[in-house]
Image (cartoon, rainbow, N blue to C red):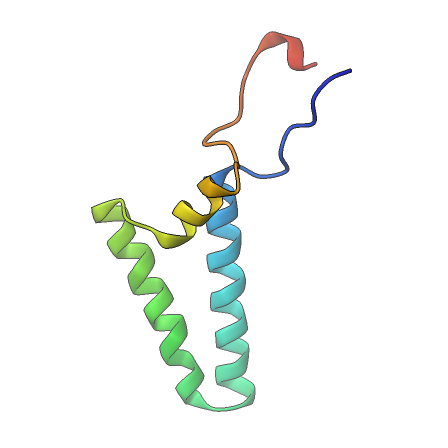
Length: 78
């Protein structure tokens, strides 16, 4: 029996969470108050700083959840 591979890698999970958070804050900014745009801005700033420094709390969290760093590409995965 083949072991199940995780649904997402760390990088994919970080991108999904960041996208969902930004969209949620943008919707709240349009529907509730413009002040909800500030957290979306801060998430964007955090994504930029993590690209330069390599430090991302979400990435650390997902690594501790045992998500793989990348997809394995072996020929036997057919």
